[in-house]
Length: 200
Ligand SMILES: [Zn+2]
Image (cartoon, rainbow, N blue to C red; front, side, top):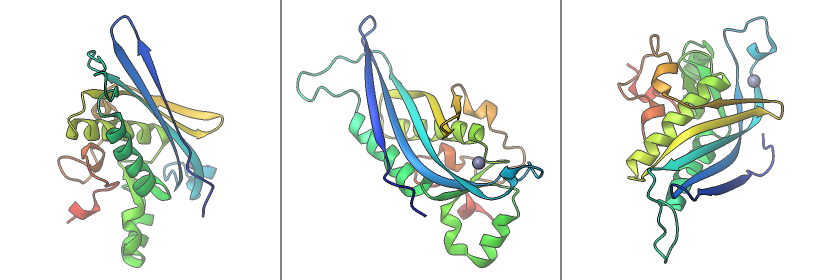
């Protein structure tokens, strides 16, 4: 189901005192999910949202422009990678807990759709998603040698409901019952949204 054109907006703020830019990207995607642990709730029924993800990047502090390209830290290249992942992996994905029995349905009946299932350790709440997105964009930044890091991810699930994450994703994502490789998908700088290829 299509919900309209993807929307892209971005902005840059310059703080003169310490010569530091902050860069924001916003991207829209459609998704579906269900919250398997909320059995008495509407969220137990698979359903969808049109969401916006806004990331805030900051640099290491030395942002002198070169007088030619005048672009901060490979801005375009980073944006391309992030938006490529959002548009081609996250958009129209189904987001499920690693413990959701719906995963077995797809494994047995529609294995071709497994690549479109984003799997989080436990229910795919907006909180879990924000922490995973935060780790993912920082993996892309580090892999591309860009001297910036993401300091905040905001996901707008509905016009009246948003979650903002900042901090250490390793401290909030609980992997105690998650079977996956040492470096799970949210920490790998690739287009993945699950770790099924590593499953036994
Ligand atoms: Zn929902």
